[in-house]
Length: 244
Image (tube, rainbow, N blue to C red; front, side, top):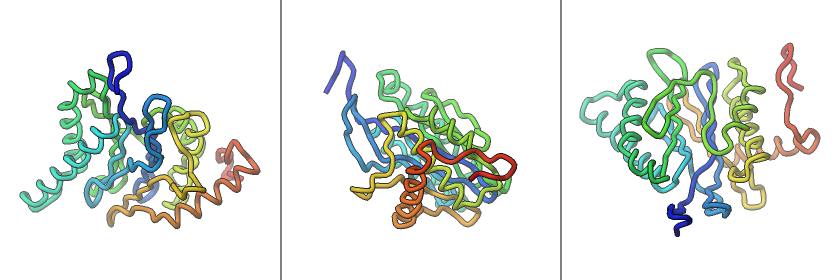
C-alpha cells in the first residue's frame, strides 16, 4: 500500500535500555503500526544477538528483523571461524556497517534504527550503543531509548535510573519507562492484560543473556498497574534514597 508516493509498512516503535551494577537491561513494547493503524499487537523487537549481547529494533519492522537475522548469523559465523567471539566494540561496529548498507532503503523512508547493548568482559560492565540511519554509532551512558516514544521513555528513565539498582529493579524501571511512553505516544503499547501481551525484556550479565519469562513479566506488570491506579504518573524519582 502506498500513500503520497511512499510505501506504508509496519513500523516498530519504542525500545529502552539501561545499565545496572552487573550488566544491562533492554526492553521493547510489542506494537507495530502502519500509519494510524495497529498492524500487529505482539511483534518481537528485542533479540539475543549472541550469548552476551542483545539488539532492539525500531523503524520498518520487516527490514529490521531481516537485518537482525543477518547480524546474528554473522556473529555466529565469526565465532565458528575464529574460535572466539568479537569484542563488544567489534559487534557494534559490524551492526553499523549493516545499517550503512541499508542507507538506500532508508532514503526511501524504510529506515531501521536499532539499539545495541551487551556485557563487555574487558570493561567489566554493560554498555549501550545507539545508531542513526547512516550507520553512525554512538555509545550511550547509563540509559537510552529509541523509537517514536523515545523522548517520553528517556524522560522516565532520567527520573528513575540509578546505577546501583539490581537487575530486578532495572527491569521494573524499563517497564515503567515503556508505560510512560505508551501514555503519551499512540504508536507505543503498554502491557495488555486482557490478551496477556507483555514487553519483551532481556537482561545481559557476565554469564550471558537472560530473556525474562512471561510469567515474571506478567507479575511485574500487574504490580506496576496496581500502583499506577494509586499514582497514575508513576513512581517519584529517588530523593535522599527515598522513591516511595
